[in-house]
Length: 159
Image (tube, rainbow, N blue to C red; front, side, top):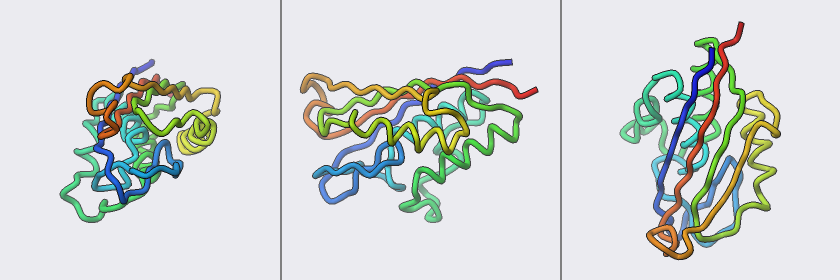
């Protein structure tokens, strides 16, 4: 049996924050604002994992009203979501992600992100697709005020 999940996350970009994306620290003058480290890519993957099995969303499992998650590394959140789907008897087949941001250019970090994500989810880096696009300077993304990430994935019931 297979299940498909889709996730999306948005964060504001502000000065004075580290910029974490796909579990990788990327040098930039701005970082994403959030209760955790605000890694939009890992958050989108978390939502895709949870959504595929109708387990709610990242806010249900890791609410921003809970101080135990303040500043938490999103790799920990992804690991916890993976454990939830593994406990239901599922594994990840593949993931396809798109990141929307104007700057910085991030594709030189894609292999490191794929390695990080694949290690946590017990899949090959070849099963993780990461793409990036700008909005041609349109909208809050084009003005470098925010970032969006989407993730689509396929789960397989383990026999």
